[in-house]
Amino acid sequence: MRIAVAILAILALASSPMAAAQDAVQSRFYLASDGIRLHYLEAGPSTGHTIVFVPGWTMPAWIWQPQLRAFAPRYHVVAFDPRGQGDSDAPAWGYEPKRRGQDIAELVANLAPVPVLLVGWSLGVLDTLAYVRAHGDLMVAGLVLVDNSVGEEPPPPPRRHRPGPVMPHAIAMHRFVTGMFLSRQSDDYLDRLTQATLRTPEAASRALLAYPMPRSYWRSAIYSTDKPVLYVVRPGWLAEQAANLAHNRPGTQIAVFQGAGHALFVDDAVRFNALLAGFMTRTVWP
Image (cartoon, rainbow, N blue to C red):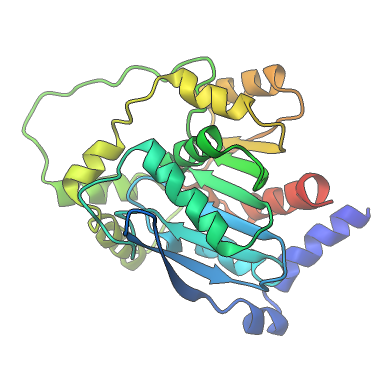
């Protein structure tokens, strides 16, 4: 009963006057070890437990706005712009998992010497697992992996190649963005999000879709840690991966979101935030 009350209190705080004072989002930068300036958004009390949100392919940090608003009243909340995305620098190099995992390691080290909850979505799942694979879980309080493969069985279905003329990059990105949602998003929001994706150089966007790692690389990463894991997916083959992960890795928590698009934390933000709040208060930081 006390846990349920705590979860409701977390979500209710987001709309309170106190929340308005606490959740002002600050824009921050840090310098990666290869000299690239990387950006993140920060909100909430610096003394609170830290949540780090890692977005997907070409996406900006601000796509996590529903979570920044919901959790800043109680938690130290950070949303990351990986290199080539959002307001981070876009160099000609570094678009592979080891460097991207290193960027997360340096972000975490820059924040505070305490373990953080890492929430990765889409490509951010792979970047988060690359971090764990290379750097271990000493600075990890838990993992939330959202709507991408973790290398479990079954493998993703093969992609169908459709012959025809190559679509202009800007049009392809707009279609990709609009396809991430099942709920109605405003034209202004979709246009703004599309423009954000176009900050990623086209060559870099292609490199990010072709990580040169076998599926076993990601699977070994998630099985290497005994920290709490929440795996959130949509129905289909990812739900089958989730069921197998829960069976083979006891203690793993899974959730399958019906009626939501790939950006399910936006499409169904209320459910996602409640799920995340419960995971944190019951499992990560009870």
